[in-house]
Image (tube, rainbow, N blue to C red; front, top):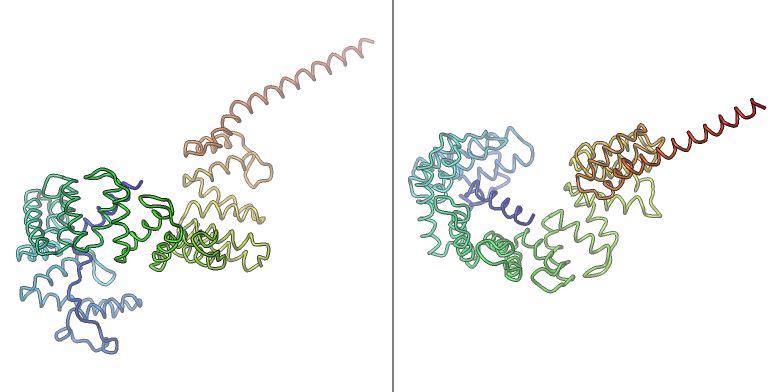
Length: 455
């Protein structure tokens, strides 16, 4: 699972190399002047800030207008040979926004212009588009050419102390982009990048040490790089550092440090960090016990779609001996959001149990069945049980019970396998015994009846 997470990270950063690069970021917008911007005299930074603020506020008409003006300003710079403006146009058209439709053909054209001007980031993106046929035909030869050009320019920048350039050289070696795949060489470039202070490289380097990619597995070295990235403010690294301290992975167990780093990640609104921090506060691990704050953190994490937090917050509210009607209502609202808004099978199952427990069997069965139909093994097991309980809200059906339990067992639910086997063999045996006993009883009754009539 950890290896899969690493591949997700690599795939995410590989799609668009310039996504995080600031272009024209030396100016900030004057909020009072946003309504009087002139696309000719205003800088791209001011126009971009105006566009983003209007978009965030839901002012679509203003957002589209500012975005169009921003594009005009960028094109003016690009026409004067500004490669950074060309890159920014390519990025905008590659991604698309609610204010500007995605246009891969134009994106590729702008990246091509910037690549011809020697812009290494654009060369990488152009190679990626040629390799995958984005914005035009696939062309492996041109892809290899631009990867090679990008790598050469990135290596030159890295030699001058550019950590981000070293990172992308490492990515190319890791993925085999324009060069044979070489995890060991990728590790060397990631380490160079991390030592130059590029925090994303520190995170990937840590994961490579943890998974043994390009090197022997080394949890201590992995922890060292996670901690370095965490100290640089990288949210994922804060979470990994906290988990390492909590579970003694590459470092001695230290619950106080674990709680400290979970708190730092929680401040960045990481729902999993909020959940972990809430659990530690609830148990008094690594610091003082704080039940009200733990509940508040669970509720905050649940609002971001974290289903386990919704369940824990719901239980803390509804199971409290002093719970009010409002508490019970809030508990259900948390589960409903997880079940309906975030489509969590766990949330659907727990909402079903909640409603069934509180007397609404119809709603309870609906949500349990919904989770079961989504493949959630505990819900399938529960459907099997309900299929054998009279007046449960589910039609009594031993065959359906066996089918649900068998499906749950295939999903990894061991008790469901036992129940399915019991119903198939043990239940069948009990049925044969019952039928046999009945027949014996009937035979004796008939014999007695005949004996009386003969007298």
